[in-house]
Length: 339
Image (cartoon, rainbow, N blue to C red; front, top):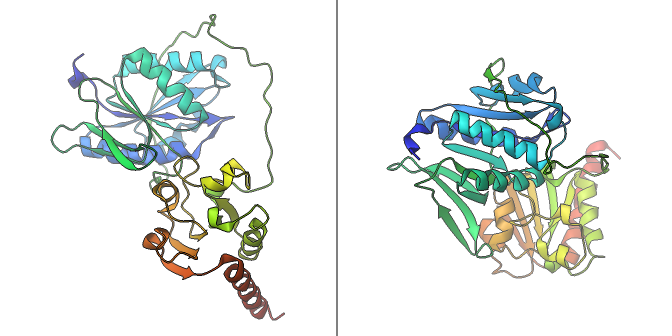
């Protein structure tokens, strides 16, 4: 392998029903930054059926080239045709870096491609940068349960590949009107015994906002004490127009659902305001919320690590503080409305 033949930073664009996942826009922003450092271009890999119309969206968020493979075999995600398509694209275009979102699809797809290409893959990265001397990709991720941060390199194999969790990177400002060059490689997608048949697609409908989209989060930890005490946090969230989230300890205890978990093994969030109630501030949790604009911590332990990252801290019993805070906000809102 001559690694000098590999150029460009590519992003696998995840789309479902012609809707591009937010993490793909985030990765295009990071790819743009990496490509500018390497003086190369950003390529977006777009697989699906009738998806070429999405190319301009990708250009507006950083793509120079959009590689489109349009086929009925790619209408729904299936491991074999997607892995075959990306492997064929890599063999043809030889990108030096490929980024995937660490979603259910990305976590299934990336290792299959990695195995076929005999290339490395670093999962769940929280930081990506270019080494000044070697110009190789430095991929940083939590290791040993989040107790240390490991930086991984792939000096002898290409492409260098990484998955990145949604919410970790930030999309760039939209470049309205930007256009990308469109490439349409011919890839044969003939069903074989590795193709599964999709017989039915069941869409789940939920009435709550994804915590990753929330502007304000009221998050509870082990210090909340019980499932019933989350009603106190819900009261505060309701007056603020916020969503309730939690740390892993609360999910493990069965107090709250997994999709509301913030942290290394949960979701990465960037709300305007993050209330950390009864949360000690372990590094695994901080990894998921430390980029919040304003962090307000409430904890009865004055030495809790959460106070090291909080903008505002209140030391005391959440069972007393949160209801008082809720009533104060209610009263302030009522006064403004003249009620």
